[in-house]
Length: 151
Image (cartoon, rainbow, N blue to C red; front, top):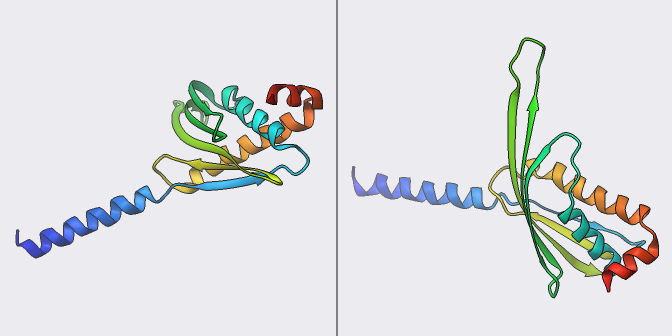
Protein backbone atom coordinates (compact mmCIF):
# COMPACT_ATOMS: atom_id res chain seq x y z
CA UNK A 1 0.00 0.00 0.00
CA UNK A 2 1.45 3.40 -0.90
CA UNK A 3 2.45 5.72 1.94
CA UNK A 4 -0.23 8.33 1.24
CA UNK A 5 -3.25 6.01 1.75
CA UNK A 6 -1.60 4.59 4.89
CA UNK A 7 -1.24 8.08 6.29
CA UNK A 8 -4.85 8.80 5.43
CA UNK A 9 -6.01 5.63 7.21
CA UNK A 10 -3.85 6.43 10.24
CA UNK A 11 -5.24 9.97 10.36
CA UNK A 12 -8.82 8.69 10.12
CA UNK A 13 -8.16 6.18 12.90
CA UNK A 14 -6.79 8.93 15.14
CA UNK A 15 -9.75 11.21 14.42
CA UNK A 16 -12.16 8.36 15.13
CA UNK A 17 -10.45 7.51 18.43
CA UNK A 18 -10.36 11.16 19.46
CA UNK A 19 -14.04 11.64 18.66
CA UNK A 20 -14.99 8.58 20.71
CA UNK A 21 -12.88 9.80 23.60
CA UNK A 22 -14.65 13.13 23.38
CA UNK A 23 -18.05 11.55 23.93
CA UNK A 24 -17.96 12.04 27.67
CA UNK A 25 -21.17 13.62 28.87
CA UNK A 26 -21.45 16.09 31.70
CA UNK A 27 -24.37 17.67 33.53
CA UNK A 28 -24.77 19.69 36.67
CA UNK A 29 -27.57 20.40 39.12
CA UNK A 30 -27.91 23.07 41.79
CA UNK A 31 -29.48 22.62 45.19
CA UNK A 32 -30.18 26.15 46.45
CA UNK A 33 -32.25 25.12 49.49
CA UNK A 34 -29.47 23.09 51.11
CA UNK A 35 -26.03 23.80 52.50
CA UNK A 36 -22.91 22.57 50.67
CA UNK A 37 -22.29 20.08 53.51
CA UNK A 38 -25.80 18.66 53.18
CA UNK A 39 -25.49 18.31 49.40
CA UNK A 40 -22.08 16.65 49.71
CA UNK A 41 -23.41 14.19 52.31
CA UNK A 42 -26.41 13.35 50.11
CA UNK A 43 -24.21 12.93 47.01
CA UNK A 44 -22.00 10.42 48.85
CA UNK A 45 -25.01 8.52 50.21
CA UNK A 46 -26.58 8.22 46.75
CA UNK A 47 -23.27 6.99 45.34
CA UNK A 48 -22.78 4.38 48.06
CA UNK A 49 -26.35 3.08 48.22
CA UNK A 50 -27.96 3.30 44.77
CA UNK A 51 -31.57 2.28 44.34
CA UNK A 52 -32.81 0.85 41.04
CA UNK A 53 -36.36 -0.32 40.32
CA UNK A 54 -35.73 -1.75 36.85
CA UNK A 55 -32.10 -2.94 37.07
CA UNK A 56 -30.16 -5.39 39.22
CA UNK A 57 -27.02 -3.82 40.65
CA UNK A 58 -24.19 -6.32 40.11
CA UNK A 59 -21.30 -4.09 41.11
CA UNK A 60 -20.96 -0.68 42.76
CA UNK A 61 -17.44 0.55 43.36
CA UNK A 62 -17.22 3.96 45.00
CA UNK A 63 -14.14 6.01 45.82
CA UNK A 64 -14.61 9.20 47.84
CA UNK A 65 -12.01 11.97 47.92
CA UNK A 66 -13.04 14.21 50.82
CA UNK A 67 -10.45 17.00 50.34
CA UNK A 68 -11.53 17.66 46.74
CA UNK A 69 -15.18 16.69 47.33
CA UNK A 70 -15.11 14.24 44.46
CA UNK A 71 -16.59 10.75 44.07
CA UNK A 72 -15.61 8.20 41.44
CA UNK A 73 -18.27 5.57 40.72
CA UNK A 74 -18.19 2.38 38.66
CA UNK A 75 -21.45 0.45 38.30
CA UNK A 76 -22.44 -2.68 36.46
CA UNK A 77 -26.18 -3.20 35.97
CA UNK A 78 -28.27 -5.97 34.41
CA UNK A 79 -31.88 -6.53 33.49
CA UNK A 80 -33.93 -8.97 31.43
CA UNK A 81 -36.63 -7.58 29.15
CA UNK A 82 -39.43 -9.49 27.49
CA UNK A 83 -41.11 -8.39 24.28
CA UNK A 84 -43.94 -10.93 24.55
CA UNK A 85 -44.95 -14.34 25.88
CA UNK A 86 -43.28 -16.39 23.15
CA UNK A 87 -40.09 -14.39 22.84
CA UNK A 88 -36.95 -15.14 24.80
CA UNK A 89 -35.92 -12.37 27.17
CA UNK A 90 -33.30 -9.89 26.04
CA UNK A 91 -30.53 -9.34 28.57
CA UNK A 92 -29.23 -5.80 28.96
CA UNK A 93 -25.88 -5.22 30.63
CA UNK A 94 -24.70 -1.69 31.28
CA UNK A 95 -21.56 -0.38 32.86
CA UNK A 96 -21.11 3.21 33.93
CA UNK A 97 -18.07 5.11 35.14
CA UNK A 98 -18.88 8.51 36.63
CA UNK A 99 -17.15 11.36 38.36
CA UNK A 100 -19.31 13.35 40.77
CA UNK A 101 -17.99 16.58 42.26
CA UNK A 102 -19.25 19.44 44.38
CA UNK A 103 -18.07 22.25 42.12
CA UNK A 104 -19.77 25.30 43.61
CA UNK A 105 -20.88 26.16 47.11
CA UNK A 106 -23.17 29.13 46.43
CA UNK A 107 -25.54 27.70 45.45
CA UNK A 108 -24.30 24.15 46.04
CA UNK A 109 -23.78 22.56 42.62
CA UNK A 110 -22.99 18.96 41.79
CA UNK A 111 -21.39 18.16 38.44
CA UNK A 112 -21.59 14.64 37.12
CA UNK A 113 -19.38 13.45 34.25
CA UNK A 114 -19.52 10.16 32.42
CA UNK A 115 -16.00 8.81 32.12
CA UNK A 116 -16.87 5.92 29.84
CA UNK A 117 -16.91 5.56 26.10
CA UNK A 118 -20.15 5.90 24.29
CA UNK A 119 -22.97 8.12 23.24
CA UNK A 120 -23.50 10.95 25.75
CA UNK A 121 -27.28 10.53 25.69
CA UNK A 122 -26.90 7.03 27.16
CA UNK A 123 -25.63 8.57 30.41
CA UNK A 124 -28.36 11.20 30.75
CA UNK A 125 -30.99 8.94 32.38
CA UNK A 126 -28.41 7.93 34.98
CA UNK A 127 -27.56 11.60 35.62
CA UNK A 128 -31.28 12.37 36.09
CA UNK A 129 -31.73 9.38 38.42
CA UNK A 130 -28.73 10.44 40.52
CA UNK A 131 -29.81 14.08 40.84
CA UNK A 132 -33.41 13.04 41.63
CA UNK A 133 -32.13 10.73 44.37
CA UNK A 134 -30.13 13.61 45.90
CA UNK A 135 -33.22 15.86 45.79
CA UNK A 136 -35.35 13.14 47.37
CA UNK A 137 -32.82 12.54 50.12
CA UNK A 138 -32.51 16.27 50.84
CA UNK A 139 -36.29 16.69 50.92
CA UNK A 140 -36.94 13.67 53.12
CA UNK A 141 -34.06 13.72 55.58
CA UNK A 142 -34.31 15.68 58.81
CA UNK A 143 -32.07 18.76 58.79
CA UNK A 144 -30.11 17.65 61.88
CA UNK A 145 -29.24 14.27 60.35
CA UNK A 146 -27.65 15.75 57.24
CA UNK A 147 -25.79 18.38 59.30
CA UNK A 148 -24.43 15.76 61.71
CA UNK A 149 -23.27 13.48 58.88
CA UNK A 150 -21.42 16.33 57.22
CA UNK A 151 -19.20 16.99 60.24
